[in-house]
Length: 279
Image 1: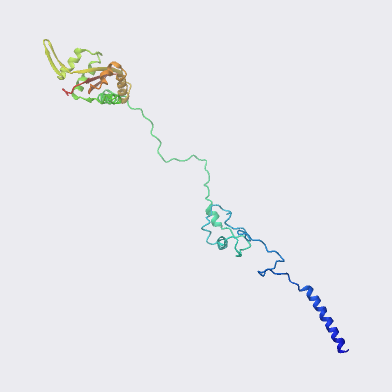
Image 2 (image 1 turned 90 degrees about the vertical axis):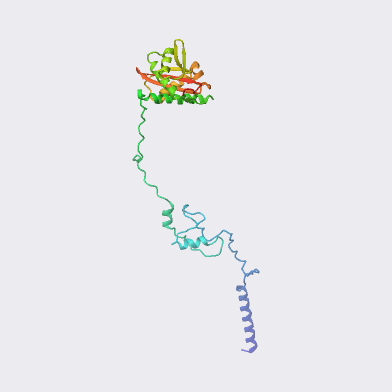
């Protein structure tokens, strides 16, 4: 074969090879960043990750986000990785800590149908106060003064002061009215003369002691305790307009009360005075 013919064959073969390579070696155009635009890349948002954030919706609400279980290294790594970063996360969800679940839900003790046991002592039974006896005469008299003074103070009259000498006369009078329930002047003069209490008056055949006090007397059934009887009697004098005019009068600043129990009843004598001359 001549050299000329051989050269023509070689040229034709080269042209054929160049044509075939040009059809298969064409590359898609690239943008300025060097990333191919032929196949679009996935669009990532700021919060998109390859798997859900573990602490975004915790399966156990009571587990503290700040203190994950010490042995759960995978969970700690996932919690510390901000969402939307390019860091790789394990494909499988992190194991849940059994210890965290156990401590996050307190167990409820089993309900018992047995009645609750109380350790406190039962309340003591209510016992009515004892009925007043003859030995309570002085206590009743003092309580009557206490209640009368409460009424006097309430109306602005002020409390009356108890006089010891006049109290002896009032006690004597409470014994007299057991048999003679009246303001008998003879009985009154007998009582003051017995103690020589008051202004001594001698005029002709008259010889007596004037205690210069006004008297109120009362009686009540004996089936009452000390406080109840005293309150009843004080209210009785207060509710009597004629008696309360001086028992509750502001001018009568001194008081004496006597009480005697006889025949199943209490007999009360109240003496009110404007003066403390005789004590």
